Image (cartoon, rainbow, N blue to C red):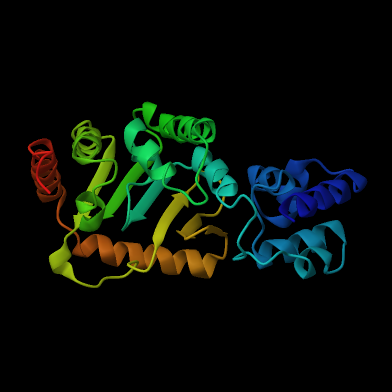
Length: 268
């Protein structure tokens, strides 16, 4: 639906003899935002759609046929993956397992290999390769800025075995020590807090509106709605304020990693 919407917009723009920049100026949006809409990567807000309709003299077509911005998408993570590559700031929240861009190879295999129905080894390897490719955004020493807010259960749930967990947690600690990722832990003692209901990723961009992605079992949603994105940002800020400070978070992660490293495999 996003692709069809974008293609229709592009066709109307070209019929009007306008460049992307000219349409952007008329609709009071950025040129890159027009490009992302036409490519099916983003959807305009309702206000943007109204201005685009006015600029292109298309009545209320763009606003009337604006897809449900909170609908689950086919191949649901792909739109979020594309946005992730464009973001200048990413804020992750996880309560069950480590966010994808922070996963080690062995941890990723353990997570992706546990899917249902079971995946063939070749399919699992392909998915892990994609996961590791995503993580390459951290190769840039500056951008995107990344925050990771982790429930303590992420650290305590043994995925892939103690050795894999020790490696995974220390990988995150290393990223923190390199000042590449800001990580804060929400301890069990905190009890309930905002965002506890599901995984959330908040993304900010240089020249387009912020977006959010939420995920549950077998489904995920990209959110463009300014109201909803703002609400999620607020919930994230509250949860971050209740999390352990950075130094205490690193101490806790290091202690848990040592527990895994010293685990006796013969213990039941």
